[in-house]
Amino acid sequence: MHKGSGASAPKRLLVHFVMLTIGILLVSFSIWLVYLTYFKGAQRDEETLAKKAVPRQEMLYESFHGIDESVLAGSKSKSWCLKCHEDLSHSKSKEARGMLNAHSFFLACEVCHIAPKEGEKFEYKWLQRGSNTPLTALKGQPGDYGGTIIPFKTENGVSRRLDENPEALQFLDESAAKDSDGDYEKRKMRLNTDIHKEFSPKPIFCDECHRENGPLDFVQLMYSPQRAQLLTFGEGANIIKQYKDFYLPSLMRNTRSERYSHGSADLTQTIHLGVGRAFSPERDAKHPFPAGMPLTGTARHVGLKPDLQPGFKEVLYSVALSLRA
Amino acid sequence: MGGHGNNERAFVRLTKSERIQHVILFVSTGLLILTGFMLMGEVWAIKLFGSAGKSIFYWRGIVHRIAAVAVTAVCFYHLYYVLLKTDGKSWIRAMLPRLKDGVDAYQNVMYMLGKRDARPKMDRFTYLEKLEYFSVYFGMFIVISTGTMMWTQSYWPKFYLDVADALHLGEATLAALAIIVGHIFTVHYNPHVYPMNKAFIDGNISESMMKDEHSLWYERIIADEASKSANTANATEGGRNA
Image (cartoon, rainbow over all chains, first blue to last red):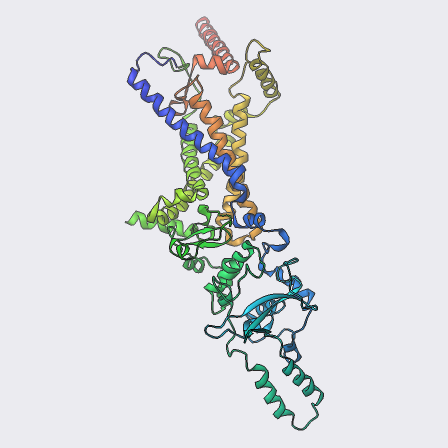
């Protein structure tokens, strides 16, 4: 504009240059803000992303406790294990029994309690409850697809359901009928050994399935790729990995210092991508991210989650430290 | 430049206290916008920080909180200023919305559409300035309350925190855009003031700009001065006669 006559031409040019640079920066920043709000902002967090990616009824975005609905509905087909064991068979561990019993509504007991031996591979299939026909798709609430995952073992070219043992079943029925028999204790012991001979002394633990390349192939079990991701890397699966001893009191404790101690994520190494997946360049080179999986990555997910950010005391402490240094 | 000519008379637009408040406000708001939107940064951009990223993001949180405390403090001081200080009281009295603001807005739009020959005569604060001023109240109420919630997040249910997060981000985006598109343009890029309106530094507004943008205020000041000097003259004369 008509600047005062005192300003020289180079100075005026400099002013124009600075103002133009700042202007371009500001305009780009505004455009980025508009992009964030209207184009990217909508899918900035895992939850909205997951909601977008997965049909609503298939998504446990509320929490994995949505499983309760199927627990309320009850087990629709009873395993013959339940002839002796109770409906809610897992009772030993107070901390884990809820989760384990919830799983037994859609997993045959043998999925966890018969571990494949070295080099052995079981096949897992969804069979419809009652009719025992294979499911063609998963419909309904998570964990309540109307079917049960059944393990199959191939022996001498014949595929056998591991949760069925007609011989033992017959034996069991006989024993129930002949309870009055004086030989009861002896019979019971034999039965016990016979029925349980295939069972592993230690069951398969949660994180042996909820991981990459575990015995259960979630995609083959007809879960959507997104849900399979969630089962492999999602919040629930991550909790299992972090808290193997299921020491829930510590998990539920909400003190800041405790949460701090878990916030060790390295920014350059760990960037959350997609549905709760921790991204690490090394690991991803080994196990590439599934194609078609939507990626999200915001600084919000970069290790330093909001709850790992400093509180008032930490702010004062950091300032004091830096002043002293 | 429209204003600040060498031989022009200058009027006080901003007192020293107001200028200091403004400096604290824009420095801390700038820091808040910068450190806040770093959280929304694109992954490739964040990766550029390399191994320093972790400490940069740690300090990002600290700086954001310090700037937040500063901006909160200046807001509360400003409330004290407009409610109890003389200059502040005259400020807020001039700032309060009036029916004339609606008329001004209508007439100004008509002028810009070419249906009127002149802009409406405006007072100390134009309707746009009032709008901008009170939108800061609205915005500050939202960001300070939701920010406090997120800072004290262990005391709140997740649902409220999610709402607070959404509001905080939304209001921050709105404010940042309003500052850039509205305020920065008006005080820097508007041809009347380019490259900047120096009122925030020296607190002065030139006579020509007064006539141009706040003619009603200008006329009132001139009239006041005229009547004052007339009174003084009368008083002096009366004294002589006695």
